[in-house]
Image (tube, rainbow, N blue to C red; front, side):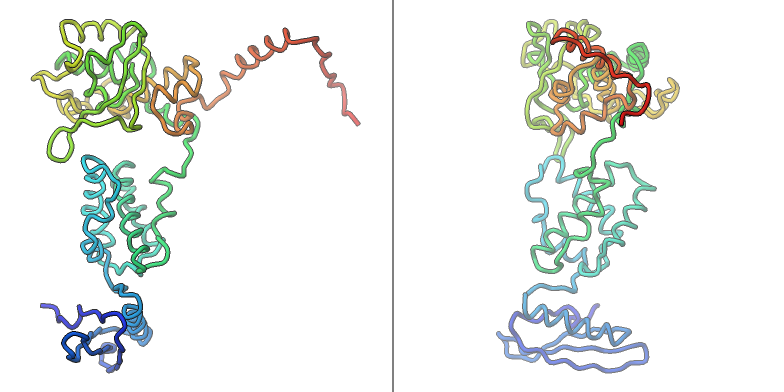
Length: 396
């Protein structure tokens, strides 16, 4: 059992006395004070290797008497001491749960034994580097985000002055990174024929899986949003589908909530999707679910993956890099290629930032010729034409 004297912290405002004893393997450093309530003499002992560590220990104890904060606390102990305070403002049914898993399974095993004041940007960077060899980008994001939040609390508690995780994590958190034009296109299915081939293959397991594929792609929707569609969301008069909710497994069971952008959006009904919507809506009431699985339950992306043996299926079709979320990328890419204006596409996809929408644009110049032709037609009718400049030599 650990010596309780090594866990005591001096109260704010007490006067400390210090002494050092040299040992064969280093130093025994001790601070003592009089407990204000019991009037007894108590203290704390630390066994360290160098004289510099002795002074560091004394400085830490003096700071405790000044601020009331324990600057010797490890990340694990600090996270336990603040409880759920770092989760303030998070959605408890989804984001908070994922962040909590990231903290428990990755952050604390990697950094939890280190004192909060000794965690550096370099340590965090090397930890992220290691995670990148083992985990997906989303898993890494769900690990860095709680680390940032816990260390933000340490800043507020005056344990540290600057959060070392904040700026080193930008490459994974994505909040300060602009999408490269065309970056998301690599995750898309090339054409409608290939999409139908994939849907037909899923349909051999059950028709609902085929419908899920087509709805996800042709509505450019997330799997949870497809699961949340109701018959009344299909507006035949305006030929649009309203997407305003998600249905997915969360903490304590299935969760129904708003879309990621927290507002409804409208997606045009493409011709290829019309017969599917008609079939799914026939004979149902407006509040009925539009799509359900073979046993009448909610179709989740994990259900589709397991039932269709997704990885083997897409590999056999030459689409080995395709994920279920890649179906949303597919629809977004096709709409971008069709020339839908960027601001309209942003509304269809529900992006908060137009920079994210730009990721679906071509990275080359194939549309510039058409843009130039359109501009030239406008200019040719707006007034007398100027003689073209001659390029027969330098102009002095």
